[in-house]
Length: 275
Image (cartoon, rainbow, N blue to C red; front, side, top):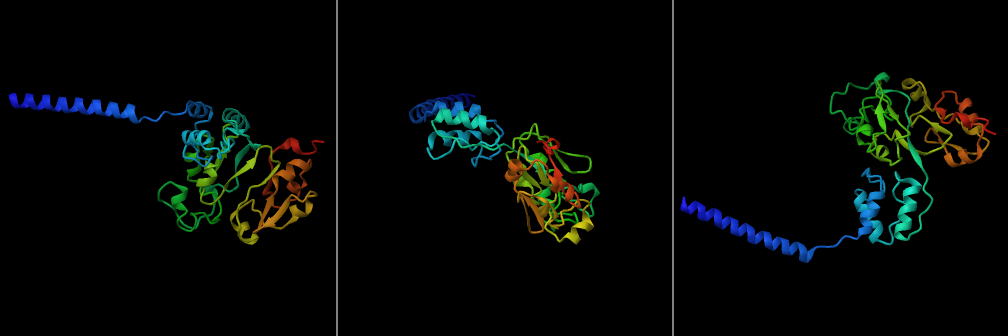
């Protein structure tokens, strides 16, 4: 019993000594954090989305304060307001930040699509895409296993009952996380206020698309010919819209009416004949 008490006392003394040494070392070698870093971190949205190119909001706050070459407008979810505040606090110049929102470029729900095979693996689009880009007959379509929903840091995406992502534009900050993780590039970032979008992302030939989808872009070029502003090009079998030209010049998107498959969709009804 006496030996046990001595051992306990010895361990207590050793612990006390090490505690004192650690406290001394902590005080001696402590690095003071610039209080501006904490101030800027509090301004950021806390989504930890990485859209700024840094691993989290604290990392960006440190970088923008300590590195003169790091711009104050890299927080996409924070939009122009956060960029302005960070610029003021750091004494830097912020560029114009364009607000954007996620858009789903697929109209064929996974639950109603033709399949190449039955998938029963991990419920994850990335995992399913490893085999022939997923089970859907359209290898460019939404796989519908919710990877975008799970990775959205702002809870702005939900799958509907058919397995197609629905974006809540009021919650979406345009961080681009869903676009980053989507293996088939179905999720796309578009400027807020964009007039028209192509909801098809398939690069298959038009005849092939028609077999698998009710609203495919067949690359016919009718929309391009109809657009009086030169805002549409056909690339790799898809109509690609220059959103900025469309937003600046178009007040009557006739391309939507001319599209034979209705893959071009009007995003803002008030745009038509606004003049």
